[in-house]
Structures are given as C-alpha cells and as structure tokens.
Length: 251
Image 1: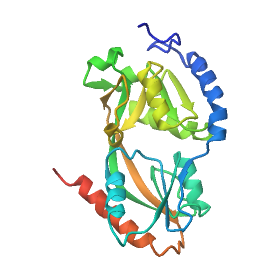
Image 2: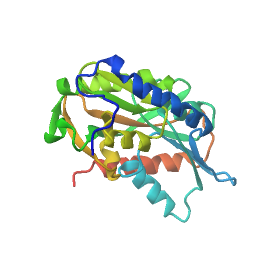
Image 3: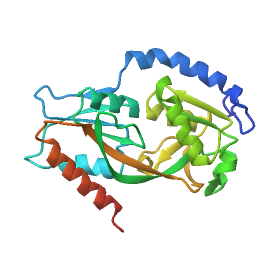
C-alpha cells in the first residue's frame, strides 16, 4: 500500500501544511457539534476536568482508587483541551482540573503533582522510526499535529518548539480528539508529541521514540478555583497527591 496522497514529508515547508489545514477546517463542524466530552452525575458530587490521557499514570491510578472506595465521592467528568479545563474551573463548572503546564492560574490555585516524559509519536514506517532516540534538529524538519481548537494553537506550538529546540517545518492544530490525531499520525500525515502516560493506548501503525533534547519533561498540575467550597475537594486532592507520589516512587 502506498503512502497517503497528502505529502507532508521531512522537507515540507510550513506552507505545505495547508492540505491538513483543509482537513482541520472540515473537522470544525464536528468540533462545534461535539463540545468537550462530559460524563455527568445528576445527583451532584465532585466534578473533575482533565486534559491528560487515562491509559496509564497517576490520574488513572487516582480514579481507580477513588472508585473502589465505598465512602468515595460520586464523580462526574469533563475532558477537553487545557484551555477548556481551565475555563471550566474558573467558571465553577468543574471542582478540580488536571492539566499540563505551565499555565496562567488567574483566579485559580494550582499545585504541581507529577511530571511526565515527552516522546514523539510517528508512523512505524517513518524514516526516523529506525532510531530509538531522535535529535531535535531532525524533528524540526517534520510536520507536527496536535489536538486542540484554534485558540490553543499558540500554546501547543510553543510546547513543540521547546521540546525540539526550534520551529518545526509544519504545524497543524487539529480540532479533534487526541485519539483522532494519533490515528492521523499512524496514517503518515505527521508526527506528534506524546506523554509517557499516553503509551498505555496502542494505535495502529504508531510507534514512540524518545527525544534527544534537554527539555522533555512536562509538569502536570491540579487546579481549582480560589475559595472552592466543595467539601469533597480536600480529600480528593490528598488522594491525588498520594497517587502522584506512588507513581514517582522507584520501582
């Protein structure tokens, strides 16, 4: 089977990302029709927002532990981009959010809980997939894909630039879920940053490689609104700290 007709190879300039921009534009309708995913409990309880993978890591362990406690709070969820979760926390739509940083904590309190290693995801037949570790200079010649709305493009691009030590040849912020972006990576439309916690999910045709860069660690924070009155927040935050400590203990 041949490569996708959309050519976003290593030598593609920034302008070459336009075909994927067209794809992203076509997906705007889907993004507008499906706002950040919510699983709500009409009886109330603790509302949790997150912009992180649940396939492995401290957040997954936290939710597993809390769900097994008979006295644990009823939980409802909102999943979205970092901007979605932060805005929801400021508006009081979630009681606590988990996002990567650094960010602007205006009208919020934030506490770093854990750090996750950044990897690069690429198609298994990508030329760079032959190496266990990829230099930043080589990644600067690639087109990066990232999930998020147009409003998140700047922060997502800044994250890529910091991880690879410079500007990529192309960058597209696709208004789609994280899962869809990784499927596009597996189909050869570009590469993407991925956290170590996301590696618990396998995507067809996708492999992960380490980045030979001095900055490949991403901090994750719990955020909540100042003056939050939810009585279940304190115990839940304590459990989150415990889950983060357990994750970082030497195995």
